[in-house]
Image (cartoon, rainbow, N blue to C red):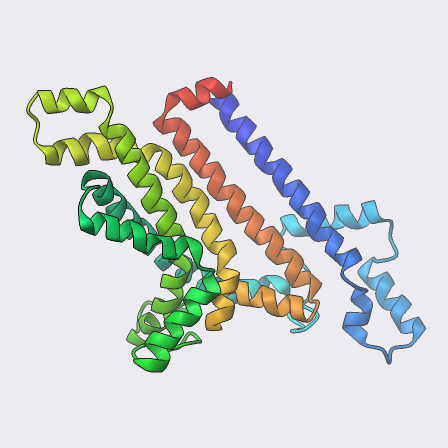
Length: 323
């Protein structure tokens, strides 16, 4: 088990090293940072002075090592557009994204697992076929089309929910939340549904396929032969074995929710890190772009690492095969 854990930590470290190289390359290939900071009216002497202060005249390996050292300490410099420390800007936007991802994950897992179990058990009913047909919407339609459709229906036509922004937030000092007000919940419903639909569909179809596979195994047949009630067979024996591979997909999907939030936050003007990244791309704000890539990669790596370790704990054959 120790070898398995060390190997996973080593792989995670290598992934972060590659991502850091890509993030660092943005500083050298996404325009001259001095031009972004001082504009065209600055003299040549002023430009050279700023380049020396920023260490841009140092050799590339030296700059990369310095970038790595600062990144480990959470230091990514100043935003070219906002003139604020990048870490503070991201931490200010982070609660909005994490709360949106949290609500989306709850919707995707709750409805996805429930609908997947139902369509796996009662696969020949009309309602099961209706759920499967409806789930194609979440797979086939782009996220921004779903978001715009929801805005048109619930915000423009019915006027039930707001179409953009994050009103009703409460500042707790260390966290700005929208969970404590009715306006906050009304604002998060549409973007959360939009963000969760694709993941909900994937979980639904995975759980259904696993349920159908498990229901055909011998131990389910033996359980029926012993006269156990269908409720116990379905939810104690079949569902328990179904959830083992689903854990991996759910873990990966949580990372995907954070990555895909870029589109959803742009459509709904949700003030999270995804919208911050889009605005940074528009203004070529390289420090924020670089920090965001590192941040998303770190979340992906951390979630996948936790899933791998949980998977090995649940199924010992995984770690035995890996050693």
